[in-house]
Each structure stands twice: as C-alpha cells, then as structure tokens.
Image (cartoon, rainbow, N blue to C red; front, top):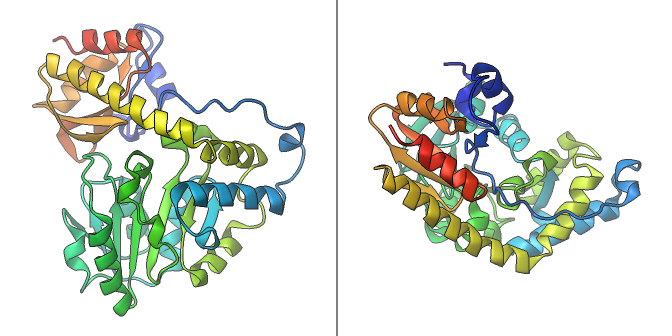
Amino acid sequence: MNKDLIHGGALDVMQLKFPNVDRPWIDLSTGINPWAYPIGDISAEATTHLPTRNLMHRCRAAMARALNGPEEALVLSPGSELLIRLLPSLLTARRVAILSPTYGDHRTSWLQANCQVLETSNPLDEADRADVIVMCNPNNPDGNTFSASDLEDTRYRLAKRGGWLIVDEAYADLAPDLSMVPHAGKESLIVLRSFGKFFGLAGLRLGGAFVPKSLRTKLEHILGMWPVSCPALEIGTRAYGDHAWQMETRQSLAKARRRLDGILMDAGHRPVGGTDLFRLIEVEHATKLWMQLAERGVYVRRFEWSNQQLRIGLPADSIAEGRLAFALIP
C-alpha cells in the first residue's frame, strides 16, 4: 500500500491509483468539517500587501477571545503541523510520553530529535518520570478525552520538575469545556490549536500555540515577521468572531455524526470511538474494506499500525451519504 494513502487527504494519489471508479470521489479520509465557514470577500490588499502588526493583533485577539485564553500567550502560526515539528528543537527533553494511538506526527517529530519515546494509553501516569508529555484532547482517532482538571494536575507535577505538557487541541472546538486554553500562560504548558478542522478551511493554514512568555519569544523569533498570510488573518478574525456560526456548527455536526453512525450501524459497523467530525470503526480486515470502498469511489482513513480499524469522516450531503451506504455493502 502506498504510504501516501495511509495519512489521508491524498486524493490526487487515490485518483491515480483508482482511475476507473465512480466520480466524483467521496473523500472521507480527513476529520475536516465538510461545511466550511463562508469566507465572503477579502480585501484587495490581502494579496498585495504584507501582513501588518494590526492585522496580526486583530486575528490573535479574536482567536484568544473565542477560545477564552490570554492573548499575550498566543503565537499565531501557519497551522499546527509546523508547531508540532518545531517544539522538539525548542524544549530540552530525553524521555517523552505520548498518548497512543494518536496523531502520528507527534511521535515522528520527537523520534527525529533522538528522544526516548514512550507510547502509552495514559501518559498522565508518567508525570513524575517524563520530561515531556504529549496529549491530543480530544484524541485522534479514537476520540478519547481527558478533563482539564486532570491535565492541570499533570502540568503542575511536570512544572515542579521542569517538564512540559503539550496538549494538541485540534478538535477541541467541538468540546470547549475540555480546553486547557483558559490555563494558558502557566509554566510548563503548551496548547496547540488548529483553525482548519472545525472551520473547514484546512487549506488556509492557520493555527496557534498558547505558551509561557519565555517560549513565546523563542517561537516568534523562529516563525519570523510574517508567519501567517493576510487572507488567513482576515478570514480567521472574521470566523473566530462569529460566535453564532460556531454554536450552530457544533449542533449541525452532532446531527451529521448521528446520521453517519446510523449508516455505519446499518452496515454492521458500530463505531467504537471518534468525535463529531469522524468515527472510528473496528473490522476484521481493515485493508480489505478500505479497498472495497476505494473501488467504489469512497476514500477513508486507514492506519499503518492497525489492520482492524478505519476512520471515516462526515459525508457532505445526502448523495455522499448514499454513496457511502452503498459502498459498505459487501
């Protein structure tokens, strides 16, 4: 199996590998909202001028307010993926405990930094031994969650030893009560946020890290003067300020998730985890079902580490739901 097809989102590669399937492709391989925020018009200057300090400030302020965090702790970035890859070079660590299974680039980044990586189902137990603990909350792909109070207790224990707690909240827009952003700025805490998944605008490349002051200076120096484009800043400011859209979207995503659950259960696949943006199912032969779906023009997420699980995103409309239901028929 082509490794490009394991990560998800490689629709161009799928089209080459399966050239004769039904079109259009139904891409359910990512956990991205299929009903993107309506971006509207952007200013002419957004594509002809460099980002200004004022534009950066307005986006940072809107994001901090929406997430209930301190603006002074927030560093904007072109998505959270770059931050994941930068952090090992900024933190002194030998032993890193990572929630497992989880988003694989965390593990890859720390291994490339020559750290000892412990993958565990409960890294909070390592607070007295690890230099860094990495959590995705809610977790991807199983949707498991950890309370903010438990994470704050872990942060406190790590801080006493000079360690770090990294919380990747790429899907926390779905469950704001879980967020550690209200604790941002405290010693030893790093909270990563992604704009693209909940707002459905992954191609815009906007994200951020809530960090202590000492780390903010280092991170801003590495990212440079213009880390985020003007279009991303304009749209991000507008979207984070649209609280009504955010509330309505949480409700509509929950309804869509329930419809997806019904489709999966009708086909004999009861979800074993996930969030309101994706569902995780267990099957006897994941590669076989993945191939069956692909041959019918439906692209879902498979995993290199498991041949018993698939992750399935939300179909965008009733036609896509019908295509998925048909593709699941043996």
